[in-house]
Image (tube, rainbow, N blue to C red; front, side, top):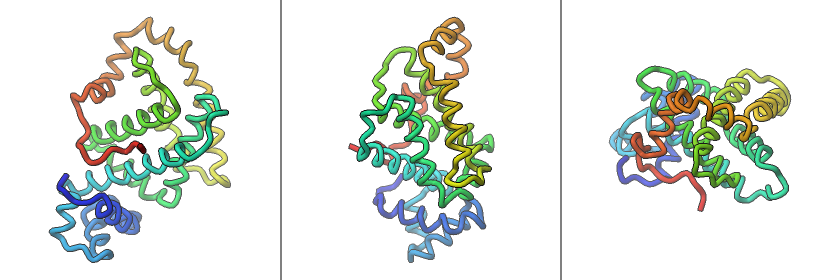
Length: 226
């Protein structure tokens, strides 16, 4: 990405979001957002040279940063790891709530074959940031299994959330806790997984490759709060 400022990226993302519900994640939405903030076409291309892909990347980064900032300021010491994970997911969803249609449109865009790798990268970044933020320091086989399991939890929870009409997303929160109860039993999961290590590494190969920087995310700003 070009040497534009983070504030320019964030301003254009925020402006474009008001148009995404009608135009989807498209160049039309980006151009409309740019006009709203007085940004010309050349400047818009400098901010997001890869167009929609950069805009969605930045939208996901903003959600991750909000989640991490909230986790940093909250007192989570009394919560167990799985409770911190649930809190983190709910905090990220709270940030996304005003932009539910944009999330739906974004997931549709990322589901296209040509965009699938970006979707995997963004999901991996979210689960990696989340695990570090809740205090996980693993560096062994469980490093990958934990991230793979949490990716599944977040993916299914997002789909539930998109259809949730309950007050304060109560149905999503209940679903999330059931999913975490099912899959966050890391020690028992490791025993089952290690018995078929080859199959699991095959299914998590893309995550492993990203960790080892064989599919490195573009250097567009670290989402972690320091």
